[in-house]
Image (cartoon, rainbow, N blue to C red):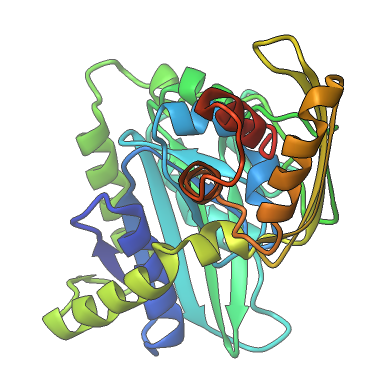
Length: 328
């Protein structure tokens, strides 16, 4: 199994690289990469129910969906992602312990007492420092995970806070665990760059006759195409979410109370009900409900639609508050 070390922190490109190596290559390879600040949701999750939507948008943290299942994770410039892609026998492809072993050995060789957890994660003193997930394609498997080295845990925790009571769906839910940074258990002189190099070298040593490989220009072109057509699209990152219903009660700044209920199917709003404590606004709010039917459940699109069509005689600030209610 040869090793590939990414030269970019572009999340969409790195996720597309995983898919390319799995589906369009026959080579066994391990792949290490770092992503710029971003949130990565599991394939079968409802993006909106996994994130703190307001915090994520206010802080302009992009959200991407990966190919594998499992829970939502936060990536930044001090989180190392590892990925193993290998051909094997059907029925014997997914093996969390097998692919965690070389990571555990590398950490232990640094003097870290890392252990394999019951949830297929990697822990230090009971705190999670690595989450893992797998995806099978024909007779090939992709196993990947995170290694929190010195991530900003305050951003991680704020990004992944949500209100499970306002969204009803059948999507896979993340299980939150107490997390920690690996750097807390290492000598302070050990920086992130040194850590990445150490892990990469340790994996090269673990696999017999392993050598470092690079992507060809042709491979990069194909990966860029996958990134553009899939991982950089709203349809994949948000619209692929399972159907859901969102109910919310909130108060506008003018004191009017609103009860909002929407249903979203395949990324489109199929039902919308808005009730107001102010009867003088009832008709105008009903117009909002009708206008957004079959519209993409995207905040910017909805807001632009309601403000530009000029059919709803409501002040822009009220429209903005109403639109906020369509999201968690």
